[in-house]
Length: 504
Image 1: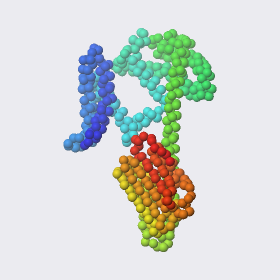
Image 2 (image 1 turned 90 degrees about the horizontal axis):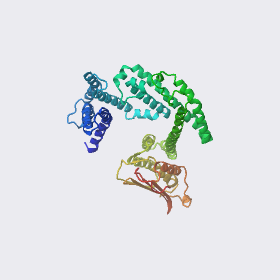
Image 3 (image 1 turned 60 degrees about the vertical axis):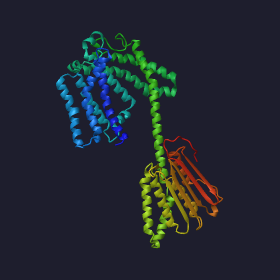
Image 4 (image 1 turned 180 degrees about the vertical axis):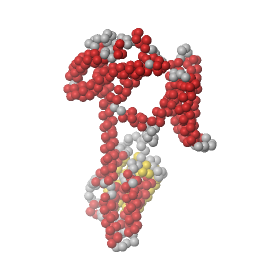
């Protein structure tokens, strides 16, 4: 196994262990009583001891291929998972019989983090958990944040109810034993605190969906400011009067923004005005970012749609001529009929299946060109001279399909089919260091020698696809030289190349 292959599993081990390591550090800092590095490092090493089963599990999960003997890994992983993430926290709790002991908290945190990892990898490589987070709207995320803050404050108040009743103060840490004993009070306090925060959320929601959209954008900042002040002055006393009716205000001093239980106090209005002022730039930036992302997605979608439409325009002339000649061969009962049908089938298979991919190996594209020319050679059975050469330093180099064939189709359509029996076609394809060089030289009929070069549907199609797929990385030159038409196309296939070059 190469060094790269070893490195990747080790990174996975680190990523899996990192959350519980961070949790262990926080827990060590929480339990620290003597502010010295010696005690802090001692606590870290002591608490890390309880993460040893998790580290061992992730090491075995990601590095079992390095073991010299391969056992029934799947069964061993399942049994290890049950022991570590299910029975290990239960055994630690039975040993300590405390909900807040460091071993139990660490083992429980490990199980919770594993559950999050399972949710994040739910959909075969797609990070479903992060997709759900990204799909949530800004309003939903704000509500979720307020709910989390309410829950945390509820935990702190319930940890020491006497302290809250005496001075509206909260302890610096959560006492889970007290919370467990007074869990109905904890739920009630969380709900009431969430109600207070939702009063502020109401101002945020009105600011985003009414004031900014209906007043600021169409009428300007002065009407917006007047509407915001009017809304805060009128709505704040109503909300505060209703909130003062909740039982939490009887447990100690009322916890509305004003010091006294006065719903008309200017301090209340000032706080909710601050919500409007602070949320204004945040809302503006987030909505601008969302619109920018939407425009990028729309542009990508339109580009893909355009590329598909451009691909569908390829080969109608060739297919029409081939079918006509196939009909003529069948009428003559020619022995070439089965060969023509087989080659046409292979060409259409490539167009319908492989060529629908964004990129294909260049060897497949060259094979398609050779089959195409072979079929044309059968159709044009007179003494026309066709020479094809290809030099590829890497046959697996990816390239956009059905680009070069457009120039070859033009060579047959406007050159070989209209010229006399001495017409010639020379095609050269070279690939070196991700630089693709294509040259196509075909004879011209006497009627088209002096005609100007025109960009019909095929060439316009080609240039548009080159601009979409290889912007600033291609050069197309078309010229007429000594009764011949010369088409030269150079493409830098290196996706990391700088955007230099000339567009046709």
